[in-house]
Structure formats: C-alpha cells, structure tokens
Length: 126
Image (tube, rainbow, N blue to C red; front, side, top):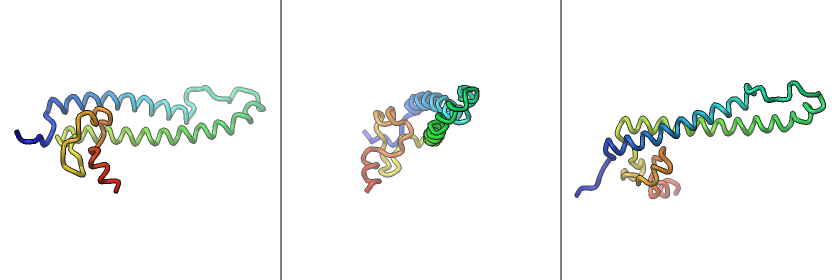
C-alpha cells in the first residue's frame, strides 16, 4: 500500500472542528484581554480615594503591560489557527513543511496549527 500524501476529507473535517473550537475559545480570551487593557468592564479605581488610586497605579500599569503581551500572543495564536483553516481548505493541512511527510494525527490534535512534524522541527532548529 502506498504511503498517504495527505489527509482524507473526513480527517480534515475532524481537524477543522478542533480548530474552530480552539478559535472560538481563543477569540473569547482575546476579547477578555482587550477589555482588561481598555478597562471597559468598569472595574477600576476611578471612583476610589486618591490615596488608594496612587498605590494602585503602578500595579495597574504592570497589569496592562502584561495583558498587552498576552493579547499579542493570543492574536498570533488566532492567526495561526486561521492559517490552518486555509490549509484545510487547500487540502495541504497536516503536511510537514520541512519533510513533506504527514504530521502525525496525535501531534495535530495537540497542536492543530502545527506546520512541522517533530522530525521537521528538529531539523528546522539546527
């Protein structure tokens, strides 16, 4: 039997469902991070005493910076998931970009936006 060169349409649908689920959660998390940065949830120190506000300002700045970094990482993750959906549409999903072989299903279930197999990742990092 010849070695598979791509995943079947049924397998691609399975991966698509996994990616769409992760994408929905990622977008929800991204929206929460954006809200914490802009303080659109209304839970801030605007209506508290000036002394308390001064003590909290330093922590608030650090918290916003950390939220900003997390939001950037989340946005990058969303972009990777969306790119994976395009690869599914093009029927190139699950093919290692370094080796040209299929990435094992177990890896794709764990990291659905992966473009490298373990072997390809090891070769890529050299």
